[in-house]
Length: 100
Image (cartoon, rainbow, N blue to C red):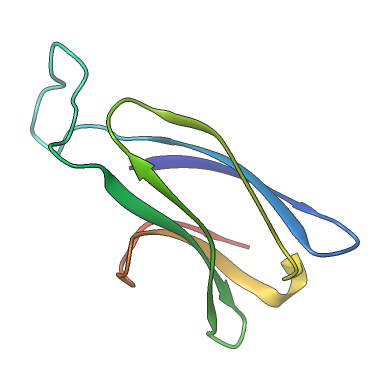
């Protein structure tokens, strides 16, 4: 997974806008037609605080293609965050990470 995330500080917390791109597995060629999983795959946008606390700021499902125009907001300020992670729903292993 490759993600592009823009985090914007606000007076009340932080706004996020992001998009995700889902390349094929390493060593595999992209399919001739767009890949569509058998079932939608659920992801989470997770904020990891400087104290290690984890906050799920957003969830979304992927059913094939690119995912663009995703938005979320939180009361957590950027100064309280150590990093932003994208994980599979219910898992702590990061698929993509941005350190702040």
